[in-house]
Image (cartoon, rainbow, N blue to C red):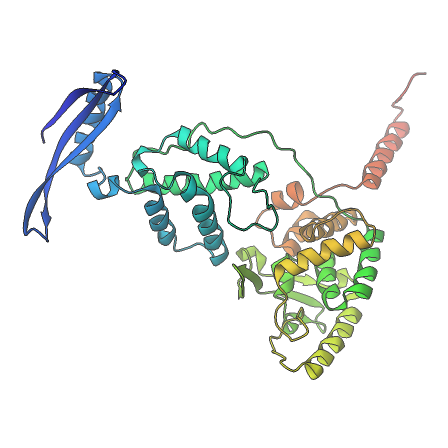
Length: 405
């Protein structure tokens, strides 16, 4: 397998080094004969660097780990499509999110580059353009200026890095260019949680202003269901006789389409006791009567079996649940809280009531107790004050002075 190193000059006069390596001939169907293949790489500063790269390529061809010439010519855009199509085990929502990032950010930023020639500075430049709003989706209702939070830029980077890691795994490139990328410090915003009085105040306001959705907000605040789980809850999933609420599916949005699927993980398949909210059965019966009335008066009623439904029986769009929740929170004059924050609120209230981690983890559908207690647990000011009072009482009881004599 012949190979050679050669020098060449740039227009500026600077000297660079490259190498040429003869590869095994391949059969060309169109020409009806074997054709010669040669690999060339240039841009090395030193002869030694080019020689080492040549030897590395020769070794790869010998042992069968070297990428084909066709793979070496792949652009980032071409590989992005191939990589996404190969991801057979990801959820439809994940596939949609990956496709969005690749088409709206990665392809406009580095899609024209040959995959094997992408360097870390190309990744840095792409992320910089994304931060500046120069690379952005054609339509973005939430951020019309195109500027993203640093956490969102990190998510784009994570998907980009996974794409390049896939190319390394397939031995198309020897290493990933996603190394040494730095991000700005981001503040850790712990979600605000409500106390019992604030929850009761919100639910009363929601029942008066948005009765068709109020039961869904109660389900999130009382039982800790995710937004999609609350939207996908069916009448058959609530057993008033046994006093259990069964989470068996969730509603997911794939683009503008709503569909049902299994919960987020195996732990998401769970049952939650209805006794967590003594007022829930009465609220549910009232909601059922309202929905039965809708079914009678609607001209185009669609029976889905869902507890949360539009006036025509169809599923409630997930974005509408979140948006309406925020609007009701503001109108009620309550501290800001997102619909996902209702899940944090439920866990924090259960903890304040003395419920052990194992039970709370099971009710939330978490795979590990660390998620339940490290991410979803937030102490309210009154809990801090109560804990401090307990410590002070202990010190007094045991003769420990906490101040000057």
